[in-house]
Image (cartoon, rainbow, N blue to C red; front, side):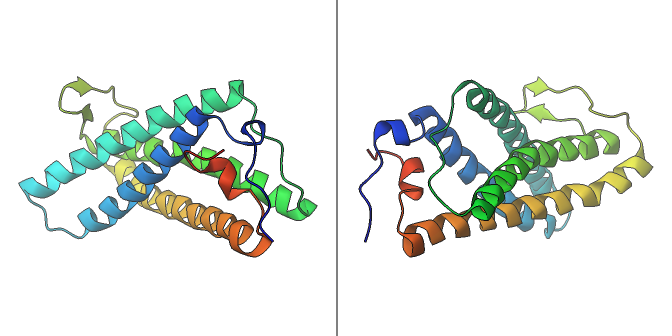
Length: 183
């Protein structure tokens, strides 16, 4: 039996919902874009795509900072009743997701800086180097950006699986609390 939709007090704020879905789309899109782009041969076209990827990463970093500030100043709705281990897993996963929202783009920025490739957001706003130019450091950092992106992807998949489990198996209102335009 499906329970009633959550009330406004039981839902996330419209701003929190907007941050959630915008970042979800950007993170999934940027991850897929990164997978596509790394397999391309070196060319002017690939360099353009790398710049777009960097711009997306900087945008994700900025939105993540704004989202974290929002979250720190606005209480989320109370947890739904669930076994303690599930509540703990949810809190740990959310914490790890927030951490990766920052780690992945910052490691990418560090790699780009160490490799000597500046980030110029949208072609007009140059960002300072995050670390000094050092080709050996760049080679050491490069695989970490990919590894951390995969960690983020696995966390996103786990988060999605848990949300779908709550919706289709537990038949509770957890997913409805984050759905746009509900309640």
